[in-house]
Every structure is written in C-alpha cells, then in structure tokens.
Length: 239
Image 1: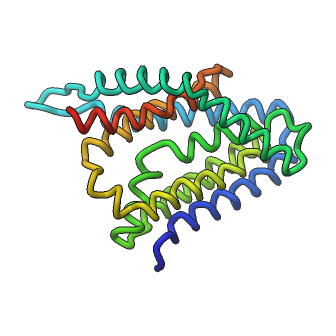
Image 2 (image 1 turned 30 degrees about the horizontal axis):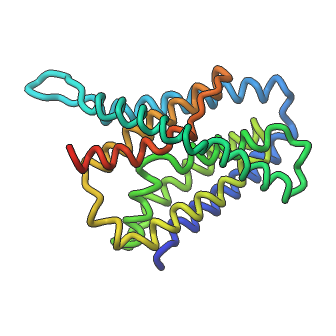
C-alpha cells in the first residue's frame, strides 16, 4: 500500500457515510431528527467520557488513582484563552459559510453547525494524529482504516440529523491528516507517549463538550478550545 492510503480511505468513508445519511434524512420527520440528535449527543458524550477516563484512571499499588487532571485543567484553560483571542470558532463559521455559499445552500440554517460539529468530532483526538504517523512511518494504515469506519458512521448520523453540511468535514480531514502524513518524519521524533496520552485526554474532553452541545443544545465554543491540544503537548515537554 502507498503512503497516505489511510487518509484517502478515511475521507472516502466520510463522504460515503454522509451521502447515505443525507438520503436517509429524507424519510425522517422533524421529531425523529430531534430524537436522533439526542441519541447521537448521548453517544458522543460517552465516547468522550470513556476516552478521558482511560487516560485519567490508573491503578497504583492496588489502588485506583487519577493522573493528568491538573495537566488537562491548565491546558483547557490556556487553550480556551488563546482560542478566544484568535476567535477560532468564528474562523470555522466563516469557512462553513463560504462552503455553504459555494454549494448553493444559503437557505440551509443548519449547514454551518453540521460542518463545524462534524469537523471537530472527526479531527480532534489522538487517532487523527497517530494514525497518519503510523501510515507514513510504518506503512501501517490500520488505525486510519478503523477511524474511517467510525467516522463514516458518525458523519452518516450527523448528516441525517443536521443536514448535508456534515459531509464537508471530509475536506479538513483530508488536509489535516494528509499534512501530518507529509510531515511525519519531522513530527515523529518529537512526539512522546506522554504527549499522545495528553492529546487523547484533552481531545476526549473536547469530544465530551461536543456531546453536550448536541444533547442539551448548549453553546460551548469547542473550536475555541482547540489550542488546548497544543498546550498539552508543550506541558508534556516541560513536565
């Protein structure tokens, strides 16, 4: 297999899942879409919780203890501060609005929300970083193949509940993971286990926030917290 096949398959799975969800959307009533959104929010919340707990809970001397909570708190706080200064959420919204205009969906009120939520869910987390590294350096796209299945199902559900905007998260996936694949030789020597664990922890917490937005119709600006992933990497360097 050639380098980058994992990202290509991941992108294709998202497009296929999104198109399937869009076709399925046509038979859903508004009430069914609301229930589907609540179910999806619940599932995303527990995905975030399970990912976070897998990094927080450890057994030491036959006792269950926690680790990484201070790292997560500092990273999220500083990341949110930087994200608010940069207005990352606004940049995502502008990109979503540009895409909506380009595809002639100006009257689709859910397009931007669908694009932003789907992009954050599929691009935040350790798999989106470690997967392309393994694909490039070890010629092993297995992790990205697994991610492709998960992302395809998730985007299908997002599209069924929120509309066609979710499909366009395929573009950030391709650019983000493709860039990591191309830069793998530079990135890999600097990426330690503590860094990847930190990315997984903070990424899972952000996914939890996405679930809250879906389930409770909250307005947590998750995109503005994205710098927390970079902060946790720096934290691991100086820890």
